Structure formats: structure tokens, C-alpha cells
Image (tube, rainbow, N blue to C red):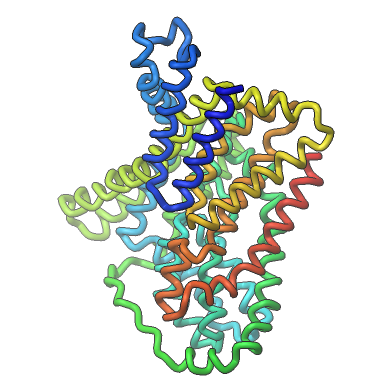
Amino acid sequence: MVDSILAVIVLILAGWAIAKNYDAKVVLFIAALVLLYSGLLLGHNVLGAKASTGLSWVDPFKVIKDQFVRQYGNAGLIILTLFGFAAYMSHIGANDMVIKVLTKPLSYVRKPIILIPMVFWVGTCLQIIIPSAASLAVILMATLFPVLRAAGMSTLTAAALIATTATIVPTPLGGDNVVAARVLGFDNVVDYVAFHLAPITIPALFVMGIVHYFWQTYLDKKDAGMLKELDKEAFIEAERPEKNTPTWYFIFPILPLVLVIFFWVFFRKAKVGLVEITLFSLILAFACELIRKRNIKAGMKDLGIFFKGMGDGFSKVVVLIVAASSMVFGLRVMGLIDAISNSISNFENAKVGLMLAFSGITGLITFISGSGNAVFYSFIELIPQIAQKAGIDPIMVALPMQCMSNLFRSMSPVAAVIIIVSASVKVNPLVLVKRTWVPLMSGVVVVLALSFFKYM
């Protein structure tokens, strides 16, 4: 009993620290070490006899080492490769071409009833190429925002649409989807995305686009006076360097997605993973760059951006996953996971209770901290173990929790994407949140409702 109480206290303190914007990676590693050494002091075996170093006080560090090794052999390597590929695509201007091609038709649409939901849906599709909400917002404010203003859309409506583009798009290239698929036991991330995530998130995205129209048009009428003054000010964005990238380069960022689906449909028995597909797409783009620029030395230097991008993936995501996994290991050593499982196994509505509890906690911490990834990666490792012992489907708990971590981010006034967009249009972040929370909450309701009916 003392073990579980101590574990809960550590967990609450870690959640509080993350909500207060302490570095999530450091917080989770410290929590993991506190739990593991507490377990040692209370007489628990951190590692079995075969896995132990032979020195019990060193075993907690071996736990962390083992988690690094485990992640590199699974989702970690995929995430590193995807981050590196995205960095290279951005460097050669291919990502800009995707945005140019996909957003071009929007300049011809003038009716708000069509334009508002279309902008949201097109922007959502762009998250497949640029998974970072903040990075996508920066690019869209420079490229799409002037188009929307020229089409007669109000400043705040355009800003709200851009601020909510990166949420719950079902893509096999998303780092959170890769991790969720691995933790939930899927051999292929496409299986998780196609059969579980997409049936929940696509209807939610459709509803969010429709709600956006009604909510933004209502607020445009209500805030007509403020908008009149706000719309007078010219939006000036720092010039983006001209790369002279051919328009047809838009093919490269979407090529991994196309190939993943192709192999999944036609060669399901072939063990061709995301890493191989992404590396093939990278080499093809690199070859085209060499032919276009005819400078081998410069081309090789540019390719080095791929490895720098991998470093970003390591520091931003993989380390976070390892830290969260280590903390979960500590919770298991302290017996908290078994205690939770035993306590809910006798409740008839354990499924709904767990789904709402984890979704609510994730949403709350994401709203307070402005970061959803840290919370999701911290909790996702807990779900299969708790669900298995409680006799429920882990997807029913994990999938809504994953969606909450993305949806509540764009409702938080301290989220990077909200700060970036609100600063660009020179308004208080709370003014922008007023524009985003209703469409996003409609997505929350749809996700929870569909998850309940699909997995009950």
C-alpha cells in the first residue's frame, strides 16, 4: 500500500512539473529514477536475476539503457528517419511545393460556406507532410494567410483555421501513430491507422470543419467592430528565401505515404517498413537534386540536413519516449499498475471509466502545459498493461487519449502554435483560443462517442 501511495505522489508531482512547463524529458527521467530507487529501498527487485548487473544500485541505470536499446530497435528508428526526411524536404523546398499545390485551388473559392471548411481540411492534410503544429503554422501564415485575406476572409477566422490544422490527421507517418501502433501490438502502423484511427478521426475532422464555419461566421458578426480595425492592419511576414524549387518536387514529401499504402495493399507479405521506404524516397530526391544543381559537393552537404533532422527527432521525441518508458517501468516495480488493474477489474463500467479518466487527464495537462506529446508518451506505455489485467481493449483507452493530446493543444493559450499565430496577427492568445475551442471540442465529443460505440 505504501508503495502505491508513493508511486502516485511521484506521478502527480511529475504531471504538475510538466504542466508548469518544466522540461518533460528531465522530469520523467527523474521520476523514473526516484521510483526505481524507492523500489530498491522497499525491497523490490528492479530487474530479474538474469537481467541484473549484479549490483542492485546500478540496475536503475540499466533499465534506462535497456529502454534506449529497445526504442532504437522499434519506433525510435522510424521516428528518427521521418524527422530527418522532413528536414531534408524542407531544406530543398519540396514541402513548400506541396503547400503551393494543395492550397492553390483555395484562391479560386470565394464563398465562405465552402472556403472555411475547405481550408481546415486542406490544412489538416498538410500535417501529413509537416507533422509539427508550430512549423506548419509558421509556413501557412507566410503562404496561405495572405491568400485567405485576399479572398475576403477575416483575420481571426483565417488565424483560427491555421491554428487548428495540425490535430488528428490519420497518417502512418505521424510519430505518435508509430508509437501507438508499436505499444498496442501492431506489426504495421498502417493497420492501426486504417482500421482504428481513421474510422474515428475522419468523421471528427469532418464535423470540426462544419462547426468551424458556423462558429467563425457567428463570431465575425459578433466581433465586427474589432475585426474592422484588425483587418486594416497589413500582415507582414519575413521574406522566405527563394529556393527556385520545381513545382513537381511536391511528389517527394508525399512519396513515402504513397509507397507505404502501395506495399500495404499489394505486398502485405513483404516486410518493407517505413525506414526502407523513407530512405528510398530520400535517395531519389537526392539524386534529382544532384541532376538539377549539378554540384555533387553542395548536394552532399545538403544531404547532411537529413542527419541533423534525425538529431532533432532524437532530442524531441525518442528521448521523451525512453524517459516515459523508464517511468512506467518504475511504476510497475512499485506495484501501481497491478493496483490500478485490480481496483478496476470488478467494475462493470471499467471501460468507460478508464477511457474518460485517461482522456480527461491528458486533455487537462495538455491544456495547462500547451504540449500534448509529453503527456501522451508518458501515459501510452501504461495502457496495455492496465487494460490486459482489467480485461478490456487497450485501444478504447489509448486512441481517445492520443486524440485528446492533439485536440487540446490548440485550445491552450500557452501552446506554441497558438502563440505563433496570435503574435503574427497581433492579438492576445486568449482571443485566438476563443475562436478555436468550440470546433475542437466538437472533435473531442465525436472522438469519445465513436470510440465508445466502436469498442464497447
